[in-house]
Length: 468
Image 1 (cartoon, one colour):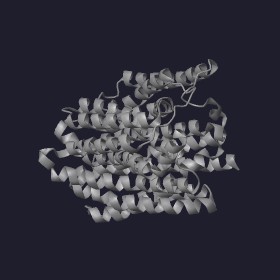
Image 2: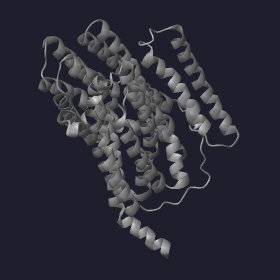
Image 3: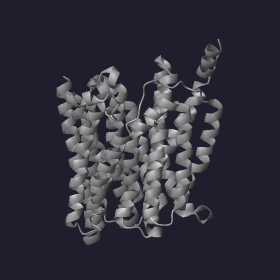
Image 4: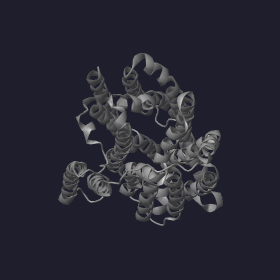
């Protein structure tokens, strides 16, 4: 009887629980974009090199990508509520450390820790929604979740510009990290009082060696892209990258070994033979390769190349973020009628948006923030058309028993794509900027964005044929 009463109480409070976990997701989303706006100011104050600037973003993504599956399984083992609270607490403490950092290398290490704690926090959000909601209520809950994801981008861009410009108590850029601390404290207090205790799932195990090997491989592969320019691309930089490729190949063999011993590998190896899913993952990688890297490059170009102040630079992205939200709402209806074609149309619209952006900068010597904002809205709408239905389309061929593993591989691929894009396209941008001009550097970066999005569209089309 006690169990029945407890379950009913938990159900009656589920919308409050939704507010708590979605608030944590909002904080995570804001953090991803608020740092972008502050990056030029951070670089100037800490005397950070271009490689350190890229690493501040990329190392966070690598840590999150390699540990997010482990974070999800920790929630299964120890209960989503306990791991969620631990993740929020860790994210708050590491955010404080980021704000107190006194050098570029220290900030990179703090961001590594912040990404690891985010990997504890974020998986529990979707797990909680799956546990507490079903039917029409689930659709409504995930609708709220989707809107919050879109608004987090707009809030991050705007808040980053406001905090850097206001320079509250002389904190400057440090405030963009400190803001997470009071938010985290409120979320933890509410979670302790309202979130239900979820039973642990028996039989769930961790693949710690797999996570370590994947992290080492990605670090060896992406690290040289970040610091290669600073090290004059010496021979050993390429050697480290070759080691990274070998380590990632070893990761696949290790995962097969774990499966043969009856363990739970990080990835579901049966999914590697699903042609539609694997083609979809390649499309996801290249789509996100041109995602966060685009916002980093545009932020650097506006603040350094066009001398647009941080507040105005942040506000440039707000219309883009809002059109992204609108497109996300439209894409659901269009996807039901046109299937994956809407994804390819969204990629084409992004390319059109990039062409309009380049034309605007080429024709107008010093485009205003308003003019840039209008050009970026096309890109934002196209991105929203793709991103909202992308996970559903890629996971469509995955059998229900492997849905969790497929979702984990999808989430990991998105962050690896983001990190690789920041490292590779960032390296090209900073190299051309230092030897030629910021304008030419932006044009080169946009050419790479177009190439990446076009490859993504090609693989989406190939995935569509495999599904058919």
